[in-house]
Length: 219
Image 1 (cartoon, rainbow, N blue to C red):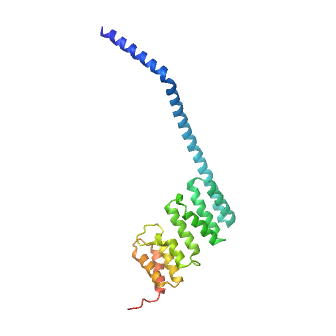
Image 2 (cartoon, rainbow, N blue to C red):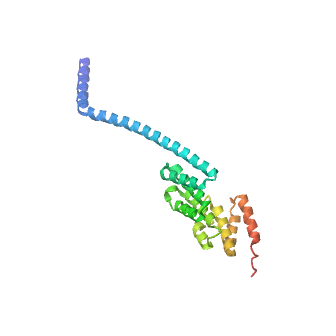
Image 3 (cartoon, rainbow, N blue to C red):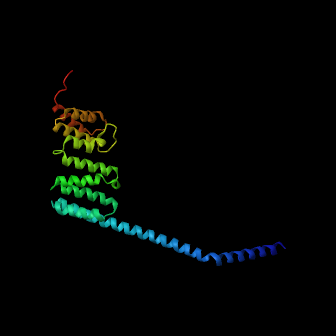
């Protein structure tokens, strides 16, 4: 009797499964098709991205070769074209290199290119800070201290943890000295001296500049 009940239960389950399959099989098949298509699409996407990265890398190397050959105008053009179509990783590097190539012929135009990168939040904070430093370096001999202060003070502040804070402080000290603002020059030289992470070479240059400053008047 128990075997008979088991057979009946099995038959009922098969019948229920058949009804479910007849009703929902099309959805199951569609789901499997979507899963396979998604997997194939992801693999295709990864292939295309790898291909784009390889092409961008080759184009970047060719642009570097032009630069090393002294063909700065051609190199700038190549980097600019690459920046317009390359994957994000190469795009920022290409923009920075294009500005560097432009600097050999037109420092002010190059500074503007760096300023554009510094203002572009999509490139990331480190790249923005680097662009600020590069632009300021090109304008150091011609810009006023107020201009340099506006550009670099946030990166150079005593509590700043910017990777480029040391270079920012050195540029501000030099700018203040060249613009005869000895109080500001001392401020930034003191900031350099008080930062235990200041690179040795930069610290030595700061000490040499400090020796050129007139002595502080005693009250």
